[in-house]
Image 1: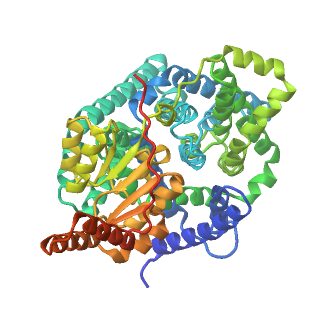
Image 2: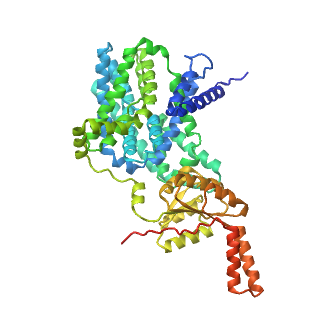
Image 3: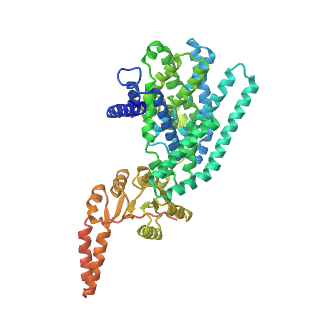
Length: 589
């Protein structure tokens, strides 16, 4: 029988993740907890089915690459530049402080200073997968907290790359002291600079052109393959050519594509496997867990958890507060960094291969990772309660923090909501869509146009129109168009795929929005009404109405008769019509 390890690992991992993810969700816990438990159940350390650990780790790496590519799509350089003053010093100081804590605590418990430093560096790095998942689950990726946390993690990843390169130089007595360290440092810096220049300058010019040619084929499969090839290709190429992590390479690739008009479509259509493979990351972590580590070294596990859950968050909290950010932001950053992940194991593996870390160090890290990752979503959600407790029990401290903090900038969504302008989304830019857009502009309403034709999008953007390139039936596309703050949505194209799904998602995202839909067939009316449309216009109905009016005119009907028949047909076809006018608000000049 042929080797079925890959199929069995995928099947066992997904089935176990589905079962335990569903159960933990029903108990009000994060599904991440269920995925970790699923990994424990299919691991070699529990009875029953055993998945292939090596294959699971490789599949998990694909999940990390796709997840980081998706983060790069949504994380623009301007956002990173805006938080550079806190992300760079914050990541550096917190990493050094955590490494110092680890060295001191582990030396006290019997390990050497060298061992403690490497172990401390390993637990100083938070998991990007966990962080982005928690931010996404709480809808905070595009908030001030999300920008700072992502920028912080990017700097941590870059610092970890330098550590991975410098460790063999610093700890190998056969390499030439300070000179060798400086040479290694400069070489790594040059490689990263070359990678950045190549990715943004060369990739920034070639990738949008490539995706334009692929999009013009109107093939969804080719577009999906193109984006996956870009994400995986740049990630793997970065690792092999520049000695950086594949996650960092994928993040940079996402930033390049995110600067083009393809960002929304890439995020919604081209990454259908992202969440599934990201689940395998947590399953693979659970598979590494050995119960014996808790029994053999309970004090070391507790000490490690104390640094991760108390020491590291405390340092991050103080840094953010001293940088004059609000208490809520400081608490959120501190709590979301109180976990460890993929880079921790990479650093520990390097230390083990150099015969510096003891054999049980990996097991201690896995135990600490599982516990901290399990608690992290719960702790993050408790941030509001912790803030209220601090305000109640330590008013002097919180008043001092509030007095020092700088005002937080408003998010794009807040600005749009506060502007007072009527926001209308028009889906499709055919003849009907063009007429609707023209009439809206003539009435001082600036619409957002959603279109799947890349040439139309590029032409509209060159003329200054607000546009979103993507499938309107996708959640991210509607979100990018600003559906949550929109006053009305016009489905102007009668041949849009999934028109009922568009209406349903729009209604779920914004219960108060007015939805005006156009469809080819009258038979679709009931489905659109059930999905949540307010007004439905049918091409069949309009043709019948026009023919009726023409016949009445030919037989000498009076204008009153024609109007009466027109109203009767409208009532017959469009009894769902809502007559309440849309309130148009204009900015005072």
